[in-house]
Image (cartoon, rainbow, N blue to C red; front, side):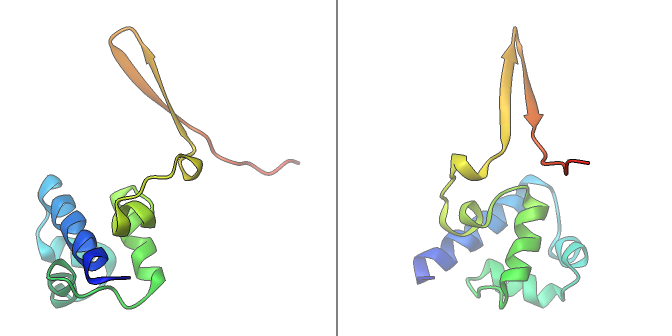
Length: 99
């Protein structure tokens, strides 16, 4: 990741915190990390592991690509939006095992 990528991650994380009216402590509690760690992330210090990035992406309901690089790949997005009249519905596709 480049410096620009770290800053994109920090901006996306800040936007998520603001949009969801969270405090740094709220987010830290949800991710089971110290508040100081989240503070570092929003100031450009990247998470130390891919597992942490995955937890953040899952919490933010986005992919790691979207979180870090602002890249949305439709092939990674199994959801389908269907508009009927004035309403849009999200059809979530989930793989199930055959029995």
